Length: 388
Image 1: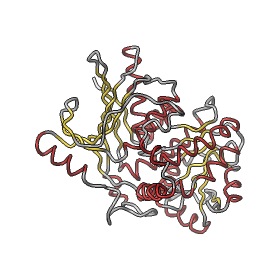
Image 2 (image 1 turned 180 degrees about the vertical axis):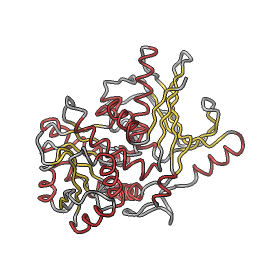
Image 3 (image 1 turned 90 degrees about the horizontal axis):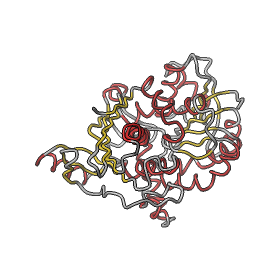
Image 4 (image 1 turned 30 degrees about the vertical axis):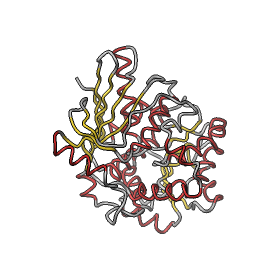
């Protein structure tokens, strides 16, 4: 594919888009052929100076409400890296155009109802044009999607078969959820009022798995004492999207994890009475509601982002008593600092490292797998480790 730019960062004047542009310029500025895009060229120029990008960094004007401007942008890039959400409000036309024009695409979507619609509507066009459409390239769901993939590849290498049961356990998470995540949840709740059929998609862990319906999944709705972890655990708010993406990845990988695969995600809150109390408190609160949640376009300070981190343990078990642990960590807050690095590396990976990947609508693991893991470890502050 011969295009003017390898990657266009669409939404670069927004808070998260600005972080993506800053990372791209500082980490890959000498090697990547990239541009910044948004509605207002003057605002883009201001952000370009603010993040220290070279004054020669190209600026592209495009507006989600103007299909012609979007198509003109799409035709100039090998990949569109978009942070403009909620995607169900502002992203559908962009996906359509990328699928039609053979332009690769990565986003930060945690909106399973909208993703189901994009898969149904644009899979055939993406296959025909060669466009790789990859959703959920941020904290939801790269650490989880790739974490399960990483564990199962190790299990197959060690035992010859995957682990039929995997537990995702968030042991530490210091940082804020993004305002975009909160806005996406609000948009989904509003969509339910006009489209009650969406409830079935949101309730089904296999709704993105290309029609496959697997076994009953473990309940993740209530706190309990998890003997495998040795701690109380509480519901993890991102599980409803992450689990769907993991099951879609399994389906797209020809059931590398097995057709009997079970997966859930919970937060670790500690042992004993104190752990139980914390678990119950977590279960009764919603971190995406309240006055402290950032609005779209807002976010934490640089100091706060750099002070953040996360640590996720994956435990794979089988009926024979076998166990394999994998750990994924990130060195910045999940919703902004780490997410901005993950989506930038995803865009570069899909352009440069996946020459034989057919067109289609993907999750990160089947699209990029080990190639993205290598990039994230080398450049983006993530670690992937198998326990002893």
